Length: 112
Image (tube, rainbow, N blue to C red; front, side, top):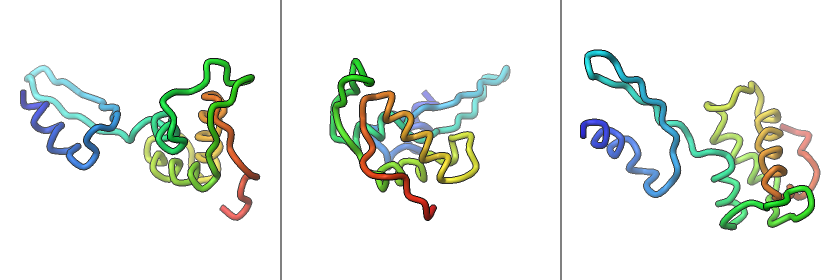
């Protein structure tokens, strides 16, 4: 019950979104938890305004996003990713998009 109260208090701003949580439970029945950002796949679905990815991402493309949208998602996900630069985070998010059957319009921006 206490977890639900604390979780709801911390996530009021992002109601209705998918949020991963890491819970640490201790022997004295206390706990800590860390709320992470939404998965990149969920954010890509919202950016592309589609319900789901492609069943055959290499053959059937379902939507497209811009590099600006990729950059916004990468900036949001930066604390949870294991990369040091925004450019590498953008490439990771673009790879997730590609594996979902979402194409990225344009060329990779060089001035990042």
